Amino acid sequence: MNYVGIDYHKKYSVATVISQGGAILKKGVILANRFDAFADFLKPFGEVTAVVEATRGWSVPVDILDQLVIKVLLAHPTKLKVIAEHAAKTDQIDS
Image (cartoon, rainbow, N blue to C red; front, top):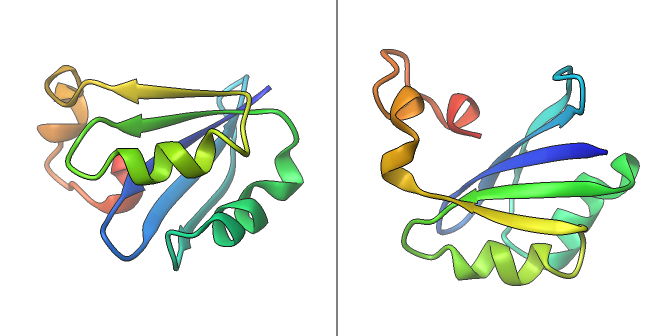
């Protein structure tokens, strides 16, 4: 099982795929928030569980990911304190 964290933006998303053991398998930008772009990014990884922060617009990536992955989880924004308080906050760290 692999996992993907998605940092969703209005026009693009940043994603990080990790293995069950925690190894980073791929980091990258999904240039368009469309089904085909997400499918191309995730194709090499087989069974994937996705995590998306429950912020404004969360339903767009969830609707797409529901068709591509085994499970989609929403992360509560205030529970992500470690990320939110990180000194070098970037989209890749968020994902």
